[in-house]
Structure formats: C-alpha cells, structure tokens
Image (cartoon, rainbow, N blue to C red):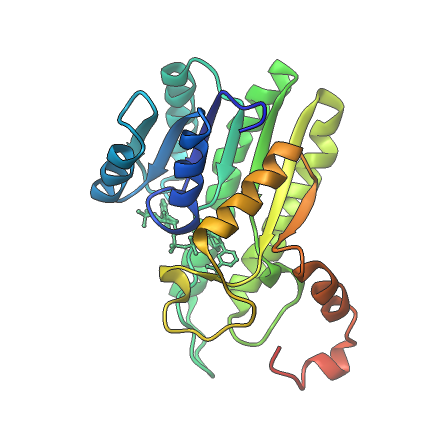
Length: 245
Ligand SMILES: NC(=O)c1ccc[n+]([C@@H]2O[C@H](COP(=O)([O-])OP(=O)(O)OC[C@H]3O[C@@H](n4cnc5c(N)ncnc54)[C@H](OP(=O)(O)O)[C@@H]3O)[C@@H](O)[C@H]2O)c1
C-alpha cells in the first residue's frame, strides 16, 4: 500500500473495515485493528498472518475518554503511525413515524463523536510529525438530509464537514485528510435492504484505500456516485421533500 508502513483501522472487525485490514496487511502494512468484538478481530488476525501483521485492540468508540491512551499505545506498539482510518459506524433501522432518541444518540456517538475522539489525538500526533494521513469513512448519505433516517444523515454530514475542516487546518503541516463517501455496500449494515448500485465490501475497501493512498481530499466509492450526488445535491428542497431518494 503506497507509502504506508503502519496503519490503524477503528471499526475493523467486520464489513468494510475488516476488508481494509486484509488489503493493508496483504500490501505489507503493519495494522492495528480496533473494534468491540474480540472473536472477529482474532479471526481476522489469523487470516492475515498473525500478530506481526495485525495487532488487535478491543475498544468501544463510545468510551471517548479511552481513545487518547489507546491511540498512544498503538503508536508505541507499531513504532509509528502513518495512517489512521476511522470507519466505525452504525445505522439502526428507523421506521416511518419513529422518533427515537436512543437510536439517534447511538448514531451521533459512534459515527461522529467517536471519530472526533480518535481524530483529535491522531491529528496532534501527525501535525507534530509534519506527515501522515487521516481517513474518515463518511457516506453519500451525508450529502443530503433524507427522510428515512434523519440522525444517520446528520452524523455523516457532520463527519464530512469535520473532516473538511481538519483538512483545511492540517494541509499546511503536510498531513492529508481524506473523506471517503461510499454508496451502498453489501455488509451486515445493509442486510435485507434493496439499494441502488450496491457493491461488495472488498470493492469498497479497495476504493477507500486508493483514495487514502492518493491523499485525495474527498472521493466517492464507486466514482459513479460523484455525478449522481452532484445532481441530487442540486434538487431544490421543495421538490426533494416529495421524493423518496
Ligand atoms: N454498508 C454501506 O452501505 C455503507 C455505505 C456508506 C458508508 N458506510 C459506512 O462504512 C462504515 C463501515 O460500515 P459497514 O457497512 O462495514 O458496517 P458493519 O459491517 O456493520 O461494520 C461496522 C464496524 O463498525 C464497528 N463498530 C460499530 N459500533 C462500534 C463501537 N461502538 N465501537 C467500536 N467499533 C464499533 C463494528 O465493530 P464491533 O461491532 O465489533 O465493535 C464493525 O467493525 C460505517 O461508518 C458506515 O456508516 C457504509
């Protein structure tokens, strides 16, 4: 994987995150894999060639106060950190006419506040080193407030804006900040949903890592979503509210 000797993936146990760990490890990158589920992390570690290739760390990203110390531990274990990928995310199903604060809170805590808790220490570390790459896995869902799941769209819109602001802050220090916006991907998160242009997790991971390696500011995966979202972003609200997109 171009340029990275070490990387950490937060939200690495299954889905797109696990695929990124596999592809990074296959490319010779030493990886820290962070998530809650130890059995899944250990299985992934075994597939990737053991602890010399992939180190595993159990952590709930909602335990915000634990992130700085765990970040420091990962840097110490790997010797340095070239790339941090914040991929953890949740999207519970929200029914028509359901207004559920517990679900909304979970999405904001995991998708947004957890990202801030991890990206802050990583940004400070990389700013001081004058190099490094921060990656956030956002979504096409952040480009527009759609009716289906208001808090999910909000969490991803806020993550996209936060990453843009970090990029504007850090580019002068030689640090890349990359926003990955996948369209629908076949994972546990989308199980049972019929969504347009769905891709598999390995393709999504490949696209995300290509953006990370290029240090590209913001990119869609697959790139076909770029013109689609450009159009959708420009649909006037008075029309958009009457649609199901
Ligand atoms: N699937 C899609 O269509 C799609 C489209 C666009 C963007 N995305 C985004 O891509 C990312 C990955 O999604 P996915 O489809 O691969 O989902 P997934 O298969 O459900 O995997 C989610 C990952 O996030 C981790 N995670 C969730 N809550 C966590 C917590 N509290 N603490 C630590 N880790 C936590 C999970 O690990 P543990 O449960 O083991 O903790 C798991 O590794 C998410 O940010 C998602 O919003 C997905």
